[in-house]
Image (tube, rainbow, N blue to C red; front, side, top):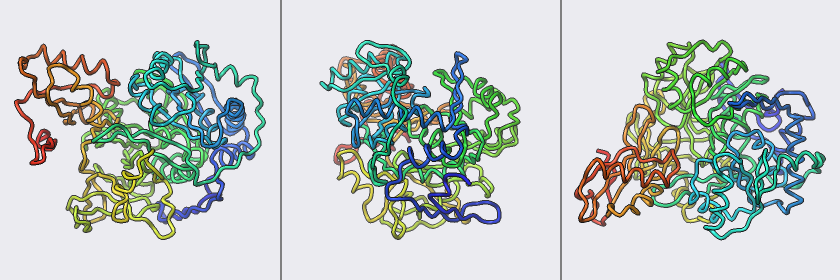
Length: 542
């Protein structure tokens, strides 16, 4: 019996397809104690984490190891004043210390704030200032300690600083400190309703918003792992994601461990398709999940045989039917698409036990009642485009759906207007009830598996002396799904030219994280606008 069966009842049909999901968890459920430590008690030698890096280093951690090292880090945090409700930012790339640290924070009731190493100084400054972080645990790579120091000066904050693996001036080496820390930890009282995790998600009209999830969030990912990614007990699941993004929570931790699967982690910086295949074959990965960008690269390069791989899934942006078909032709595996948001867990997918439909998102998770609605709130007919909305079930605690936006109750109430949760995504269904993604109602750009809010780029773009007015949009791109394009009205005295285009791109891209880089620039004499003066982005995309 997997650990997950202690906290829910899963009802399936004769094909193994899930038809209902009934949560049943204690009021003080805590993933650290009730999953990791319990698994360590039941099967101490069971694999939890298989880790390797590009330098050839390798570690295999059991659940007993995860319990021990998370307890050690928890004791270090506690001795430094980190406690229930404290906020700790984790910038750990794919280092194995991430798994120790986040479980430690769960155990003591602190709020973990994962962040990507790709962020700039201003990105870190904004997140530190708005999150009111009490501490940071970071990698020593990619000049992150230097960026953090600069960001702290910028936002005038003083927080406890830890790094991992090496000594850095101004930071305590958490890896070294853990060697001498006690691995004994008495259970600290927490509630299932406590805030556990905070991610920053891109917005279209302002800076990224802090999305807060509580301690029930991991349980909703049982469906993600078992029925979409098809992670299996004693299997090995490999999701391509850096720990700073919510996709890591979807595919590198909660649902996988709840279903008894170990997690494969390959610590790398530069994506190389051949290396991913080597990892899959060397470690005998049984299930794999990656954004469409990865599958595009793999298909173009040609995919060698992967005898251990039983299932492949994808999410994050639209997958072209051509890639879907070619992947199946080359591997014999059907790609299963899925859909959800940073604010949610898996909402719609091509689930186990049902035939995956090419180009579709699939059907709704049994955890949620999902409809497509028009602007006036009416349910759409088959083929009609509508917004994906979640309708609360009776006695539903909104499991898996975020519990708050950081310091923004007004925005939270807005997305929950009319008694339903508005995703902002457009889709349509066919006569068989299969959902197909159509796009965003707002202007979020999905590029290479990342979500980028136009405002984040426009805020930098407008600083260029030649730019008097600008708008940033996503345009179709065969490699990335969408590329970021800047539409620019020039200041008097400047004329459109290839040299100016390059100058604008270099000016902005120096200040932007790489995934936010402007790829295209178009010069226009004026912007299409509404009567109230707002730029009409759909007209620019058109």
